[in-house]
Image (cartoon, rainbow, N blue to C red; front, side):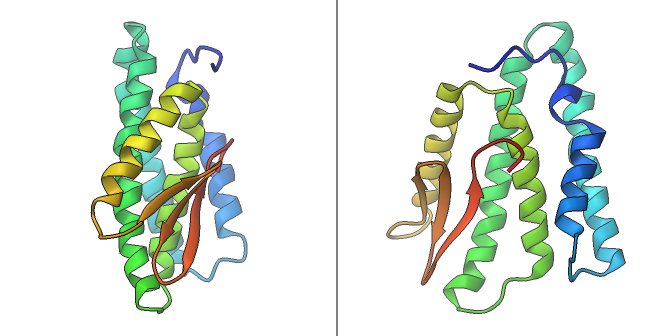
Length: 165
């Protein structure tokens, strides 16, 4: 079980978000306008997480808040990746902007994971993967070890659990 987190900013700091963006934008094919849009989006996620967390930090319910926000963002990530998977099913290149949106969410989810116990993380991931699997006939989202895989005509690993994925 992780050490008890006292503030959301300890999990999702300005520095960690900036580090994520620097990593993602290194040799990126995106335009400066697209990068700025993604910076705004990442900043919005961080602000939303930290602004709302203040109430939960004061009532010592931050653990529950982290789990709920993880579920919310993970569901958003699954929907976004379903759109990406449509490209894969058609054997066409996904929109690069969508790929970067997915990567930003994946990175933020990795940060939030640090505030969740292994059992909570496992239960949440299994529940969401099972729900997402029902969106399509046959396998769609599969958990293999520390990876979550979306399948289409080709297998694509799009999320790896772990520190700052």
